[in-house]
Length: 120
Image (cartoon, rainbow, N blue to C red; front, side):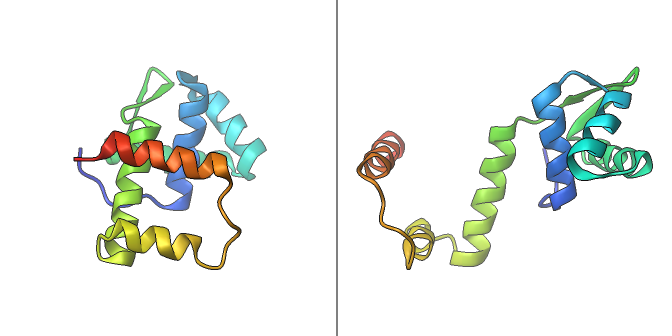
């Protein structure tokens, strides 16, 4: 599946779909109005946009995602690290941790487990 990075509004609509799918398009309009203050036309414009990117399907007024949250988050994260840190994951982690609060022992252990699981 090929698509550009998602805008904030793309991600918001996808989140609503992921959280409620399969979801009727009318219900999606209500959800987006309540969560984001969107008008009906805004929701349908965003929906058409995501359909065009091949990320959702709106069939018989029922909307489903064609891509998982994990897939999108992985793609967006890799792109961010590539653009902002020339692909350096250690560079990203150093920048992320720089000047922030110290890691808790539980967070440090979880990061160690992730690194061990993904070691090549």
